[in-house]
Image (cartoon, rainbow, N blue to C red; front, top):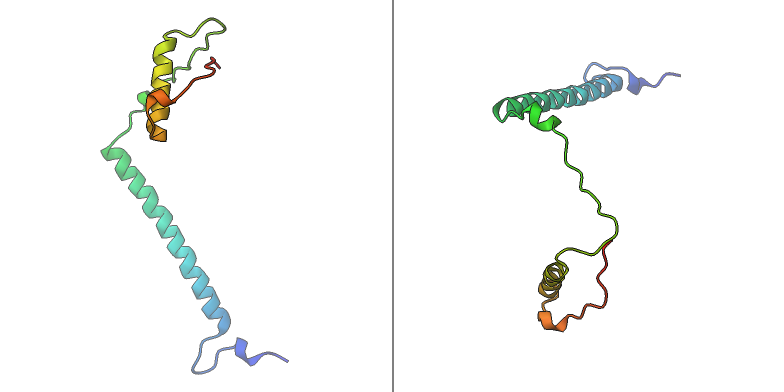
Length: 103
């Protein structure tokens, strides 16, 4: 036997029609959101145009010096100790450095 709820009566639409309309409206809304995002991207890029030359420039890579002593060791050690003391909220004289190695 067929379920009478699947078919439209004189006063209510069919269930499948409601489901299809709901899914269709949702997908139509999603497509509109994608289109709006694409258009906003075009507008922002045209107003604040990023130059392609600047984007394609290679980024410099840091050079690693193998072996040897640390240049300006005392200055680097003082800066690190000051940063640690500031973060910990203590006096810099309360920090004792046991080892400081180049990695």
